[in-house]
Length: 126
Length: 440
Image (cartoon, rainbow over all chains, first blue to last red; front, side):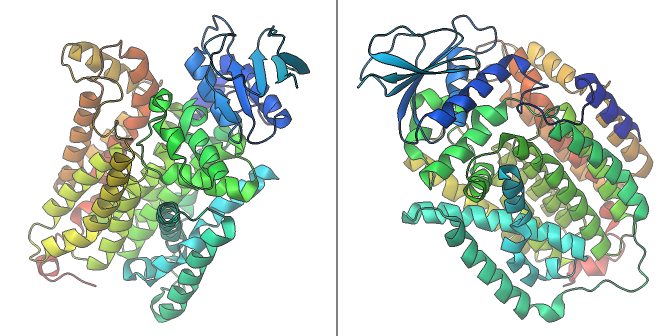
Protein backbone atom coordinates (compact mmCIF):
# COMPACT_ATOMS: atom_id res chain seq x y z
CA UNK A 1 0.00 0.00 0.00
CA UNK A 2 2.83 2.36 0.90
CA UNK A 3 4.54 1.66 -2.41
CA UNK A 4 1.30 2.33 -4.27
CA UNK A 5 0.92 5.60 -2.36
CA UNK A 6 4.51 6.53 -3.18
CA UNK A 7 3.89 5.73 -6.82
CA UNK A 8 0.80 7.90 -6.88
CA UNK A 9 2.84 10.72 -5.34
CA UNK A 10 5.52 10.36 -8.03
CA UNK A 11 2.91 10.42 -10.80
CA UNK A 12 1.20 13.55 -9.51
CA UNK A 13 4.54 15.18 -8.78
CA UNK A 14 5.72 14.64 -12.38
CA UNK A 15 3.10 16.93 -13.90
CA UNK A 16 -0.60 17.55 -14.46
CA UNK A 17 -2.72 14.43 -14.88
CA UNK A 18 -3.93 13.92 -18.42
CA UNK A 19 -5.50 11.26 -20.58
CA UNK A 20 -4.06 12.54 -23.86
CA UNK A 21 -0.96 11.03 -25.45
CA UNK A 22 2.26 12.98 -24.88
CA UNK A 23 3.86 14.80 -27.81
CA UNK A 24 7.04 12.77 -27.33
CA UNK A 25 8.67 10.31 -24.94
CA UNK A 26 10.39 13.29 -23.27
CA UNK A 27 7.34 15.51 -22.71
CA UNK A 28 7.33 15.15 -18.93
CA UNK A 29 10.87 14.26 -17.98
CA UNK A 30 13.07 16.22 -20.43
CA UNK A 31 10.91 18.96 -21.94
CA UNK A 32 14.05 20.93 -22.79
CA UNK A 33 15.01 18.30 -25.35
CA UNK A 34 11.53 17.67 -26.72
CA UNK A 35 11.68 20.39 -29.37
CA UNK A 36 14.81 18.84 -30.85
CA UNK A 37 13.23 15.38 -31.03
CA UNK A 38 10.07 16.70 -32.68
CA UNK A 39 12.19 18.68 -35.15
CA UNK A 40 14.13 15.55 -36.13
CA UNK A 41 10.90 13.59 -36.54
CA UNK A 42 9.70 16.18 -39.04
CA UNK A 43 13.04 16.17 -40.84
CA UNK A 44 13.04 12.37 -40.99
CA UNK A 45 9.80 12.39 -42.99
CA UNK A 46 11.31 14.69 -45.61
CA UNK A 47 14.72 13.10 -46.14
CA UNK A 48 14.84 9.85 -48.13
CA UNK A 49 16.46 6.73 -46.66
CA UNK A 50 20.15 6.46 -47.42
CA UNK A 51 20.61 10.21 -47.91
CA UNK A 52 23.46 11.94 -46.09
CA UNK A 53 22.51 14.69 -43.69
CA UNK A 54 24.29 17.01 -41.30
CA UNK A 55 22.43 18.15 -38.19
CA UNK A 56 23.50 21.60 -37.08
CA UNK A 57 23.07 22.02 -33.34
CA UNK A 58 21.70 25.14 -31.72
CA UNK A 59 24.50 27.38 -30.46
CA UNK A 60 24.75 27.36 -26.67
CA UNK A 61 21.74 25.14 -25.96
CA UNK A 62 21.26 24.75 -22.19
CA UNK A 63 20.87 20.98 -22.18
CA UNK A 64 21.81 19.61 -25.58
CA UNK A 65 25.54 19.60 -26.16
CA UNK A 66 26.47 19.00 -29.81
CA UNK A 67 27.05 15.31 -28.96
CA UNK A 68 23.64 14.86 -27.27
CA UNK A 69 22.05 16.69 -30.22
CA UNK A 70 23.80 14.33 -32.64
CA UNK A 71 22.85 11.22 -30.63
CA UNK A 72 19.20 12.28 -30.61
CA UNK A 73 19.38 12.75 -34.37
CA UNK A 74 20.86 9.28 -34.90
CA UNK A 75 17.81 7.73 -33.27
CA UNK A 76 15.22 9.81 -35.09
CA UNK A 77 16.87 9.39 -38.51
CA UNK A 78 17.89 5.71 -38.44
CA UNK A 79 17.62 5.20 -42.19
CA UNK A 80 19.67 8.24 -43.15
CA UNK A 81 23.44 8.71 -43.00
CA UNK A 82 23.82 11.26 -40.21
CA UNK A 83 27.11 13.16 -39.94
CA UNK A 84 28.32 14.96 -36.85
CA UNK A 85 28.77 18.72 -36.78
CA UNK A 86 29.61 21.03 -33.91
CA UNK A 87 28.53 24.18 -35.69
CA UNK A 88 27.27 25.46 -39.02
CA UNK A 89 30.71 24.83 -40.50
CA UNK A 90 31.45 21.28 -41.55
CA UNK A 91 34.45 19.76 -43.17
CA UNK A 92 34.73 17.34 -46.07
CA UNK A 93 32.23 16.38 -48.75
CA UNK A 94 29.04 18.44 -48.44
CA UNK A 95 26.05 16.29 -47.43
CA UNK A 96 22.87 16.00 -49.48
CA UNK A 97 20.80 17.60 -46.71
CA UNK A 98 21.37 19.99 -43.84
CA UNK A 99 18.95 20.33 -40.93
CA UNK A 100 19.48 23.42 -38.82
CA UNK A 101 17.76 23.63 -35.47
CA UNK A 102 16.91 26.98 -33.93
CA UNK A 103 18.23 29.19 -36.72
CA UNK A 104 18.75 29.57 -40.44
CA UNK A 105 21.75 28.12 -42.26
CA UNK A 106 23.48 30.31 -44.77
CA UNK A 107 25.45 28.50 -47.47
CA UNK A 108 24.98 29.17 -51.21
CA UNK A 109 25.54 25.46 -51.99
CA UNK A 110 22.24 24.63 -50.25
CA UNK A 111 18.64 25.62 -50.91
CA UNK A 112 15.91 25.82 -48.30
CA UNK A 113 13.30 23.12 -48.95
CA UNK A 114 11.21 23.18 -45.78
CA UNK A 115 10.54 25.24 -42.68
CA UNK A 116 9.58 22.81 -39.94
CA UNK A 117 8.72 23.55 -36.31
CA UNK A 118 12.00 24.31 -34.60
CA UNK A 119 14.22 24.84 -37.62
CA UNK A 120 14.98 24.60 -41.32
CA UNK A 121 15.79 21.88 -43.80
CA UNK A 122 18.06 22.43 -46.80
CA UNK A 123 19.08 20.35 -49.81
CA UNK A 124 22.30 20.62 -51.76
CA UNK A 125 21.78 22.60 -54.92
CA UNK A 126 21.98 20.43 -58.04
CA UNK B 1 -1.07 1.42 -35.80
CA UNK B 2 2.73 1.52 -35.70
CA UNK B 3 2.73 1.37 -31.91
CA UNK B 4 0.11 -1.38 -31.85
CA UNK B 5 2.13 -3.54 -34.26
CA UNK B 6 5.25 -2.94 -32.17
CA UNK B 7 3.46 -4.00 -28.97
CA UNK B 8 1.94 -7.01 -30.73
CA UNK B 9 5.44 -8.13 -31.68
CA UNK B 10 6.30 -8.11 -27.95
CA UNK B 11 3.05 -9.89 -27.10
CA UNK B 12 4.11 -12.60 -29.58
CA UNK B 13 7.25 -13.43 -27.59
CA UNK B 14 5.58 -16.31 -25.69
CA UNK B 15 4.72 -17.85 -29.05
CA UNK B 16 8.39 -17.69 -30.06
CA UNK B 17 9.37 -19.31 -26.76
CA UNK B 18 6.90 -22.18 -26.74
CA UNK B 19 9.86 -24.54 -26.94
CA UNK B 20 10.45 -23.86 -23.24
CA UNK B 21 7.29 -25.84 -22.46
CA UNK B 22 9.35 -28.96 -23.12
CA UNK B 23 11.35 -28.15 -19.98
CA UNK B 24 9.83 -29.93 -16.96
CA UNK B 25 10.32 -26.87 -14.76
CA UNK B 26 8.26 -24.76 -17.17
CA UNK B 27 5.70 -27.46 -18.09
CA UNK B 28 4.61 -27.77 -14.46
CA UNK B 29 4.02 -24.05 -13.96
CA UNK B 30 0.47 -22.71 -13.89
CA UNK B 31 -0.66 -21.38 -17.30
CA UNK B 32 0.18 -17.73 -16.48
CA UNK B 33 3.63 -18.85 -15.32
CA UNK B 34 4.17 -20.83 -18.50
CA UNK B 35 3.27 -17.74 -20.51
CA UNK B 36 5.81 -15.71 -18.54
CA UNK B 37 8.58 -18.29 -18.92
CA UNK B 38 7.75 -18.66 -22.61
CA UNK B 39 8.07 -14.88 -23.02
CA UNK B 40 11.53 -15.01 -21.42
CA UNK B 41 12.48 -17.95 -23.57
CA UNK B 42 11.07 -16.28 -26.69
CA UNK B 43 13.05 -13.10 -26.05
CA UNK B 44 16.24 -15.04 -25.46
CA UNK B 45 15.84 -17.48 -28.37
CA UNK B 46 14.99 -14.61 -30.69
CA UNK B 47 18.06 -12.66 -29.57
CA UNK B 48 20.32 -15.68 -30.04
CA UNK B 49 18.80 -16.33 -33.45
CA UNK B 50 19.33 -12.70 -34.50
CA UNK B 51 22.95 -12.94 -33.38
CA UNK B 52 23.43 -16.17 -35.37
CA UNK B 53 21.77 -14.63 -38.44
CA UNK B 54 24.17 -11.72 -38.20
CA UNK B 55 27.18 -14.03 -37.87
CA UNK B 56 25.98 -16.03 -40.88
CA UNK B 57 25.43 -12.87 -42.93
CA UNK B 58 21.67 -13.46 -43.20
CA UNK B 59 19.62 -10.26 -43.28
CA UNK B 60 16.95 -10.06 -40.57
CA UNK B 61 13.33 -10.24 -41.63
CA UNK B 62 10.17 -10.95 -39.70
CA UNK B 63 9.23 -14.25 -41.42
CA UNK B 64 12.80 -15.59 -41.44
CA UNK B 65 13.20 -14.90 -37.73
CA UNK B 66 9.75 -16.05 -36.63
CA UNK B 67 9.33 -19.25 -38.64
CA UNK B 68 12.07 -21.42 -37.07
CA UNK B 69 11.06 -20.47 -33.52
CA UNK B 70 7.36 -21.02 -34.09
CA UNK B 71 8.02 -24.42 -35.68
CA UNK B 72 10.36 -25.37 -32.85
CA UNK B 73 7.74 -24.30 -30.32
CA UNK B 74 4.91 -26.22 -31.97
CA UNK B 75 7.04 -29.37 -32.14
CA UNK B 76 8.07 -29.02 -28.49
CA UNK B 77 4.49 -28.43 -27.39
CA UNK B 78 3.27 -31.55 -29.18
CA UNK B 79 6.09 -33.65 -27.74
CA UNK B 80 5.54 -32.40 -24.19
CA UNK B 81 1.74 -32.43 -24.27
CA UNK B 82 1.34 -35.03 -21.53
CA UNK B 83 3.61 -33.19 -19.12
CA UNK B 84 1.95 -29.79 -19.22
CA UNK B 85 0.22 -29.00 -15.93
CA UNK B 86 -3.51 -28.35 -15.97
CA UNK B 87 -5.22 -26.09 -13.53
CA UNK B 88 -6.51 -28.12 -10.61
CA UNK B 89 -10.25 -27.77 -10.13
CA UNK B 90 -10.97 -25.89 -6.96
CA UNK B 91 -7.48 -24.43 -6.56
CA UNK B 92 -7.96 -20.90 -5.19
CA UNK B 93 -7.55 -17.95 -7.48
CA UNK B 94 -5.25 -15.32 -5.97
CA UNK B 95 -7.62 -12.35 -6.18
CA UNK B 96 -5.79 -10.54 -3.38
CA UNK B 97 -2.52 -10.78 -5.28
CA UNK B 98 -4.23 -9.39 -8.37
CA UNK B 99 -5.33 -6.32 -6.40
CA UNK B 100 -1.95 -6.03 -4.67
CA UNK B 101 -0.07 -5.96 -7.97
CA UNK B 102 -2.83 -4.78 -10.30
CA UNK B 103 -3.29 -1.28 -8.89
CA UNK B 104 0.40 -0.28 -8.93
CA UNK B 105 0.81 -1.89 -12.34
CA UNK B 106 -2.10 0.17 -13.69
CA UNK B 107 -0.50 3.29 -12.23
CA UNK B 108 2.89 2.39 -13.73
CA UNK B 109 1.20 1.83 -17.10
CA UNK B 110 -0.38 5.27 -16.86
CA UNK B 111 2.96 6.81 -15.89
CA UNK B 112 4.71 5.12 -18.80
CA UNK B 113 1.97 5.98 -21.32
CA UNK B 114 2.05 9.65 -20.34
CA UNK B 115 5.88 9.79 -20.55
CA UNK B 116 6.41 10.32 -16.81
CA UNK B 117 8.60 7.28 -16.40
CA UNK B 118 11.38 7.42 -18.96
CA UNK B 119 14.83 8.86 -19.24
CA UNK B 120 16.59 10.21 -22.30
CA UNK B 121 18.73 7.04 -22.38
CA UNK B 122 15.96 5.43 -24.44
CA UNK B 123 16.47 8.12 -27.09
CA UNK B 124 20.23 8.30 -26.75
CA UNK B 125 21.04 4.64 -27.21
CA UNK B 126 18.57 1.84 -26.36
CA UNK B 127 15.98 2.79 -28.97
CA UNK B 128 18.55 4.22 -31.34
CA UNK B 129 20.45 0.95 -31.50
CA UNK B 130 17.24 -1.00 -32.10
CA UNK B 131 16.09 1.36 -34.85
CA UNK B 132 19.47 1.37 -36.60
CA UNK B 133 19.93 -2.41 -36.34
CA UNK B 134 16.49 -2.87 -37.91
CA UNK B 135 17.41 -0.47 -40.72
CA UNK B 136 20.68 -2.34 -41.30
CA UNK B 137 19.00 -5.77 -41.12
CA UNK B 138 21.61 -6.89 -38.61
CA UNK B 139 24.09 -5.53 -36.08
CA UNK B 140 25.41 -2.25 -37.47
CA UNK B 141 29.08 -2.83 -36.62
CA UNK B 142 30.53 0.33 -38.24
CA UNK B 143 27.94 2.34 -36.32
CA UNK B 144 28.94 0.74 -32.99
CA UNK B 145 32.64 1.00 -33.78
CA UNK B 146 32.55 4.75 -34.55
CA UNK B 147 34.69 6.33 -31.79
CA UNK B 148 32.17 9.17 -31.58
CA UNK B 149 29.57 6.65 -30.43
CA UNK B 150 31.51 5.40 -27.41
CA UNK B 151 28.95 6.86 -25.00
CA UNK B 152 26.29 4.76 -26.72
CA UNK B 153 28.02 1.80 -25.02
CA UNK B 154 28.92 -0.30 -28.08
CA UNK B 155 29.62 -3.44 -26.04
CA UNK B 156 26.39 -3.36 -24.04
CA UNK B 157 24.72 -6.76 -24.41
CA UNK B 158 22.34 -7.03 -27.34
CA UNK B 159 19.03 -8.42 -26.08
CA UNK B 160 16.99 -5.22 -25.74
CA UNK B 161 18.26 -3.57 -28.96
CA UNK B 162 17.52 -6.87 -30.73
CA UNK B 163 13.98 -6.92 -29.33
CA UNK B 164 13.54 -3.30 -30.40
CA UNK B 165 14.84 -4.18 -33.85
CA UNK B 166 12.35 -7.07 -33.97
CA UNK B 167 9.55 -4.68 -33.01
CA UNK B 168 10.73 -2.17 -35.61
CA UNK B 169 10.69 -4.85 -38.32
CA UNK B 170 7.09 -5.57 -37.32
CA UNK B 171 5.96 -1.96 -37.15
CA UNK B 172 7.95 -0.33 -39.95
CA UNK B 173 9.58 2.28 -37.74
CA UNK B 174 10.60 2.51 -34.10
CA UNK B 175 7.62 3.88 -32.10
CA UNK B 176 9.13 5.76 -29.18
CA UNK B 177 5.85 6.09 -27.30
CA UNK B 178 4.95 2.40 -27.53
CA UNK B 179 8.43 1.41 -26.38
CA UNK B 180 7.63 3.04 -23.03
CA UNK B 181 4.90 0.45 -22.47
CA UNK B 182 7.39 -2.40 -22.46
CA UNK B 183 8.11 -1.46 -18.82
CA UNK B 184 4.72 -2.49 -17.38
CA UNK B 185 4.77 -5.55 -19.63
CA UNK B 186 8.07 -6.80 -18.19
CA UNK B 187 6.99 -5.92 -14.64
CA UNK B 188 3.84 -7.98 -15.12
CA UNK B 189 5.90 -10.89 -16.48
CA UNK B 190 8.23 -10.68 -13.45
CA UNK B 191 5.31 -10.81 -11.02
CA UNK B 192 3.76 -13.75 -12.86
CA UNK B 193 7.10 -15.58 -12.86
CA UNK B 194 7.59 -15.29 -9.10
CA UNK B 195 3.99 -16.21 -8.30
CA UNK B 196 3.93 -19.15 -10.68
CA UNK B 197 7.27 -20.68 -9.75
CA UNK B 198 6.37 -20.52 -6.06
CA UNK B 199 2.87 -21.87 -6.67
CA UNK B 200 4.31 -24.79 -8.67
CA UNK B 201 6.25 -25.85 -5.55
CA UNK B 202 3.13 -25.67 -3.39
CA UNK B 203 3.69 -22.23 -1.80
CA UNK B 204 0.21 -20.71 -1.44
CA UNK B 205 1.67 -17.29 -0.61
CA UNK B 206 3.76 -17.04 -3.78
CA UNK B 207 1.19 -15.11 -5.87
CA UNK B 208 1.01 -12.48 -3.11
CA UNK B 209 4.78 -12.13 -3.19
CA UNK B 210 4.45 -11.75 -6.94
CA UNK B 211 2.03 -8.89 -6.24
CA UNK B 212 4.49 -7.29 -3.83
CA UNK B 213 7.23 -7.56 -6.45
CA UNK B 214 4.99 -5.87 -9.02
CA UNK B 215 4.31 -3.03 -6.55
CA UNK B 216 8.05 -2.68 -5.81
CA UNK B 217 9.07 -2.65 -9.47
CA UNK B 218 6.20 -0.36 -10.46
CA UNK B 219 7.27 2.25 -7.92
CA UNK B 220 11.02 2.00 -8.52
CA UNK B 221 10.56 1.70 -12.29
CA UNK B 222 8.63 4.97 -12.41
CA UNK B 223 10.80 6.76 -9.84
CA UNK B 224 14.02 5.76 -11.63
CA UNK B 225 12.62 6.66 -15.08
CA UNK B 226 13.17 3.15 -16.42
CA UNK B 227 10.44 2.94 -19.06
CA UNK B 228 11.91 1.86 -22.39
CA UNK B 229 15.32 1.24 -20.84
CA UNK B 230 16.89 -2.15 -20.22
CA UNK B 231 16.09 -2.41 -16.51
CA UNK B 232 12.56 -3.82 -16.89
CA UNK B 233 13.67 -6.85 -18.98
CA UNK B 234 16.77 -7.22 -16.80
CA UNK B 235 14.66 -7.37 -13.63
CA UNK B 236 12.28 -9.82 -15.28
CA UNK B 237 15.14 -12.19 -16.06
CA UNK B 238 16.65 -11.65 -12.61
CA UNK B 239 13.32 -12.52 -10.98
CA UNK B 240 13.05 -15.68 -13.04
CA UNK B 241 16.59 -16.70 -12.04
CA UNK B 242 16.06 -15.95 -8.34
CA UNK B 243 12.69 -17.73 -8.26
CA UNK B 244 14.28 -20.81 -9.84
CA UNK B 245 17.16 -20.72 -7.34
CA UNK B 246 15.17 -19.82 -4.22
CA UNK B 247 12.38 -22.31 -4.76
CA UNK B 248 14.66 -24.84 -6.41
CA UNK B 249 16.26 -26.38 -3.37
CA UNK B 250 15.67 -30.08 -3.79
CA UNK B 251 13.62 -29.45 -6.93
CA UNK B 252 15.93 -30.03 -9.83
CA UNK B 253 13.36 -29.26 -12.52
CA UNK B 254 13.54 -25.56 -11.57
CA UNK B 255 17.20 -25.44 -12.62
CA UNK B 256 15.99 -24.78 -16.16
CA UNK B 257 13.99 -21.76 -14.97
CA UNK B 258 17.02 -20.36 -13.15
CA UNK B 259 19.19 -21.03 -16.17
CA UNK B 260 16.79 -19.17 -18.46
CA UNK B 261 16.80 -16.17 -16.12
CA UNK B 262 20.57 -16.02 -15.78
CA UNK B 263 21.13 -16.33 -19.54
CA UNK B 264 18.67 -13.51 -20.20
CA UNK B 265 20.22 -11.30 -17.52
CA UNK B 266 23.77 -11.50 -18.89
CA UNK B 267 22.54 -10.65 -22.38
CA UNK B 268 20.51 -7.64 -21.23
CA UNK B 269 22.94 -5.41 -19.29
CA UNK B 270 26.59 -5.36 -18.26
CA UNK B 271 25.65 -5.55 -14.60
CA UNK B 272 23.61 -8.65 -15.45
CA UNK B 273 26.97 -10.47 -15.43
CA UNK B 274 27.62 -9.34 -11.84
CA UNK B 275 24.09 -10.36 -10.89
CA UNK B 276 24.62 -13.77 -12.50
CA UNK B 277 27.86 -14.29 -10.57
CA UNK B 278 26.14 -13.42 -7.27
CA UNK B 279 23.05 -15.51 -8.07
CA UNK B 280 25.29 -18.45 -8.97
CA UNK B 281 27.05 -18.09 -5.62
CA UNK B 282 23.60 -18.10 -3.94
CA UNK B 283 22.77 -21.29 -5.83
CA UNK B 284 25.97 -22.97 -4.68
CA UNK B 285 25.39 -21.94 -1.08
CA UNK B 286 21.78 -23.08 -1.03
CA UNK B 287 22.69 -26.43 -2.61
CA UNK B 288 25.88 -26.98 -0.69
CA UNK B 289 24.66 -30.33 0.67
CA UNK B 290 23.56 -31.63 -2.70
CA UNK B 291 26.21 -34.03 -4.01
CA UNK B 292 25.15 -33.18 -7.55
CA UNK B 293 25.50 -29.42 -7.09
CA UNK B 294 28.38 -29.09 -9.54
CA UNK B 295 26.60 -30.81 -12.39
CA UNK B 296 23.51 -28.77 -11.57
CA UNK B 297 25.64 -25.64 -11.54
CA UNK B 298 26.73 -26.43 -15.06
CA UNK B 299 23.09 -26.63 -16.16
CA UNK B 300 22.13 -23.45 -14.29
CA UNK B 301 25.06 -21.18 -15.18
CA UNK B 302 26.48 -22.85 -18.29
CA UNK B 303 24.17 -21.25 -20.87
CA UNK B 304 24.68 -17.79 -19.32
CA UNK B 305 28.45 -18.25 -19.31
CA UNK B 306 28.37 -19.46 -22.92
CA UNK B 307 26.25 -16.56 -24.13
CA UNK B 308 28.33 -13.99 -22.29
CA UNK B 309 31.55 -15.48 -23.66
CA UNK B 310 30.12 -15.46 -27.20
CA UNK B 311 29.12 -11.80 -26.91
CA UNK B 312 32.46 -10.75 -25.41
CA UNK B 313 34.42 -12.65 -28.05
CA UNK B 314 32.37 -11.06 -30.81
CA UNK B 315 32.65 -7.58 -29.27
CA UNK B 316 36.39 -8.02 -28.71
CA UNK B 317 36.89 -9.26 -32.26
CA UNK B 318 35.17 -6.12 -33.56
CA UNK B 319 37.10 -3.79 -31.27
CA UNK B 320 34.01 -2.80 -29.29
CA UNK B 321 34.97 -3.80 -25.73
CA UNK B 322 35.01 -0.90 -23.27
CA UNK B 323 32.27 -1.13 -20.61
CA UNK B 324 33.24 -4.64 -19.51
CA UNK B 325 36.82 -3.41 -19.15
CA UNK B 326 35.78 -0.33 -17.17
CA UNK B 327 37.03 1.99 -19.91
CA UNK B 328 33.92 3.99 -20.73
CA UNK B 329 34.31 6.65 -18.08
CA UNK B 330 38.01 6.52 -17.20
CA UNK B 331 40.41 4.97 -14.71
CA UNK B 332 39.50 3.63 -11.27
CA UNK B 333 40.28 5.98 -8.41
CA UNK B 334 39.35 6.02 -4.72
CA UNK B 335 40.01 9.75 -4.49
CA UNK B 336 36.36 10.77 -4.52
CA UNK B 337 34.93 7.85 -2.54
CA UNK B 338 33.19 10.01 0.07
CA UNK B 339 31.49 12.07 -2.63
CA UNK B 340 30.44 8.91 -4.51
CA UNK B 341 29.08 7.40 -1.29
CA UNK B 342 27.11 10.53 -0.44
CA UNK B 343 25.66 10.77 -3.95
CA UNK B 344 24.79 7.07 -3.96
CA UNK B 345 23.02 7.40 -0.62
CA UNK B 346 21.10 10.42 -1.90
CA UNK B 347 20.10 8.67 -5.13
CA UNK B 348 18.85 5.64 -3.18
CA UNK B 349 15.98 7.58 -1.60
CA UNK B 350 13.88 7.41 -4.82
CA UNK B 351 12.44 10.82 -3.99
CA UNK B 352 10.19 9.39 -1.26
CA UNK B 353 12.38 8.99 1.82
CA UNK B 354 13.87 5.58 0.97
CA UNK B 355 10.38 4.08 0.76
CA UNK B 356 11.27 0.93 -1.24
CA UNK B 357 14.17 0.12 1.10
CA UNK B 358 11.96 0.59 4.14
CA UNK B 359 9.30 -1.64 2.57
CA UNK B 360 11.63 -4.55 1.79
CA UNK B 361 13.52 -4.24 5.09
CA UNK B 362 10.23 -4.32 7.01
CA UNK B 363 9.24 -7.42 5.08
CA UNK B 364 12.65 -8.90 5.82
CA UNK B 365 12.27 -8.19 9.54
CA UNK B 366 8.75 -9.61 9.73
CA UNK B 367 8.80 -12.50 7.28
CA UNK B 368 12.45 -13.25 6.56
CA UNK B 369 14.08 -16.46 7.77
CA UNK B 370 17.69 -17.30 8.35
CA UNK B 371 17.86 -19.31 5.12
CA UNK B 372 17.27 -16.19 3.05
CA UNK B 373 20.30 -14.33 4.36
CA UNK B 374 22.35 -15.36 1.34
CA UNK B 375 20.19 -13.13 -0.87
CA UNK B 376 20.71 -10.23 1.55
CA UNK B 377 24.47 -10.77 1.31
CA UNK B 378 24.18 -10.79 -2.49
CA UNK B 379 22.22 -7.51 -2.30
CA UNK B 380 24.97 -5.93 -0.17
CA UNK B 381 27.64 -7.13 -2.58
CA UNK B 382 25.72 -5.72 -5.53
CA UNK B 383 25.53 -2.33 -3.80
CA UNK B 384 29.30 -2.58 -3.28
CA UNK B 385 29.73 -3.34 -6.98
CA UNK B 386 27.63 -0.28 -7.82
CA UNK B 387 29.83 1.83 -5.54
CA UNK B 388 32.94 0.39 -7.23
CA UNK B 389 31.53 1.19 -10.69
CA UNK B 390 31.06 4.85 -9.78
CA UNK B 391 34.69 5.15 -8.68
CA UNK B 392 35.73 5.28 -12.32
CA UNK B 393 36.53 8.49 -14.14
CA UNK B 394 38.00 11.82 -13.15
CA UNK B 395 34.90 13.98 -13.66
CA UNK B 396 32.25 15.07 -11.16
CA UNK B 397 30.31 11.83 -10.54
CA UNK B 398 27.25 13.58 -9.07
CA UNK B 399 25.04 13.93 -12.17
CA UNK B 400 26.02 10.45 -13.40
CA UNK B 401 25.07 8.82 -10.09
CA UNK B 402 21.84 10.78 -9.67
CA UNK B 403 20.95 9.80 -13.21
CA UNK B 404 21.65 6.07 -13.14
CA UNK B 405 21.93 4.80 -9.55
CA UNK B 406 18.17 4.53 -8.87
CA UNK B 407 18.00 2.12 -11.80
CA UNK B 408 21.05 0.08 -10.76
CA UNK B 409 19.78 -0.22 -7.19
CA UNK B 410 16.60 -1.98 -8.27
CA UNK B 411 18.54 -5.26 -8.45
CA UNK B 412 19.59 -5.26 -4.76
CA UNK B 413 16.01 -4.31 -3.84
CA UNK B 414 14.75 -7.42 -5.62
CA UNK B 415 17.46 -9.52 -3.96
CA UNK B 416 16.30 -8.20 -0.56
CA UNK B 417 12.72 -9.11 -1.42
CA UNK B 418 13.87 -12.67 -2.07
CA UNK B 419 15.72 -12.63 1.26
CA UNK B 420 12.37 -11.83 2.89
CA UNK B 421 10.49 -14.58 1.05
CA UNK B 422 9.86 -17.11 3.85
CA UNK B 423 8.85 -20.04 1.68
CA UNK B 424 11.88 -19.59 -0.55
CA UNK B 425 14.18 -19.53 2.46
CA UNK B 426 12.68 -22.69 3.83
CA UNK B 427 12.07 -24.61 0.62
CA UNK B 428 14.01 -27.84 0.74
CA UNK B 429 15.33 -27.04 4.22
CA UNK B 430 13.05 -29.26 6.24
CA UNK B 431 13.33 -32.48 4.26
CA UNK B 432 17.09 -32.80 4.25
CA UNK B 433 16.80 -36.07 2.36
CA UNK B 434 15.14 -34.25 -0.51
CA UNK B 435 18.11 -31.95 -0.76
CA UNK B 436 20.33 -35.00 -1.00
CA UNK B 437 18.17 -36.61 -3.68
CA UNK B 438 16.82 -33.82 -5.84
CA UNK B 439 13.23 -34.15 -6.96
CA UNK B 440 12.38 -33.96 -10.60
